[in-house]
Length: 342
Image (cartoon, rainbow, N blue to C red):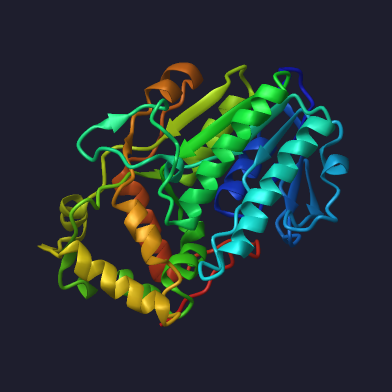
């Protein structure tokens, strides 16, 4: 992105968890002249210097070249997590829609593309030490989310080869949370009828401790800062994004004052598979399998080349998110609308 004042940035998926944070930060950036947010439904929320356009990336009728014309950068965040029982539908939005975005970036001669990849793109890796961005990105093939993220990594490899004039940045964040995303993420992963008050520590008699369940978390606003820093620099390539410390049953037990109890992986997966098969739980057992295998990420490159440092520790992120669950927090966009159940 040009350092000149007045840059025009287009953001896909602008009304979701990450999109709302990125749009807000861009609207507050003096180097940005205007922001165009693309979403399937226009929100009530309109930050300064921000316009909206109703676009469905799954539709072949969407004129993305027109939307991207005169843009200094495109930040591609749009993603559909559901329906997990119909991976062909998510493939149309996530993979085919993303490829349309990449092709339109080239056709509109946009100089910078920042793409939201994920820790989910990585091949299975270690849980006792962190890996850098050179770790293979073949995903976990049985989980649609990981399969799609990994496929797009290969699509970007080809795109960069064919369009070297476009500066491509790939962000690979850990699990992203903020208070305003609590209701959305409960609906996506826990189901519409899961009561938010169950997130209260006093409601948890014990905490399942499953071998391999060690992950990383990050506040969505901290991830958004990395996106904005990348737009204002000349960096290329992939960046891991995560906060400290690592999250496992021991840490959660300390946070919640709850005793971790070892639960066999097979028993946990069987329960999730049964609930998913009965359409009681949106999160699939295949995603559970992937989470147990995701590597821990080293974020040295983001700190060194972007000057990025997360302001929130992982424990703060989870505490804020749990409070959001309890109170049905949300925001004034359709994906993030608040809803308290129970």
